[in-house]
Image (cartoon, rainbow, N blue to C red; front, side, top):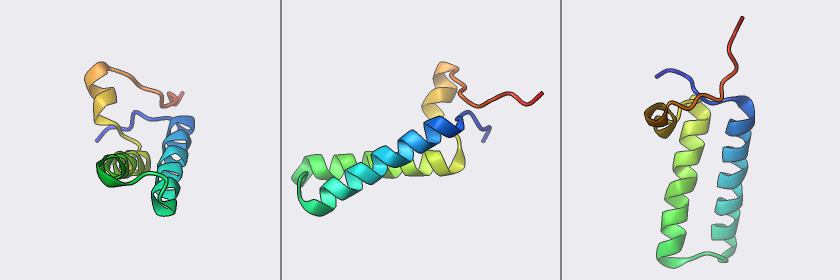
Length: 68
């Protein structure tokens, strides 16, 4: 996969995933909403780790800095 995510985007996704995980662990979010948000957090973590987002590819977005 071609990298299309910049550093700031990756950090933001990891922070959001961590917040969702914390809220689920504390019991603030539960039930179906909790499972859906955990799935979103897992997707955010995975895309941040591989530096590629399939939706960015579909819409032609690239936040990765271009090397000169």
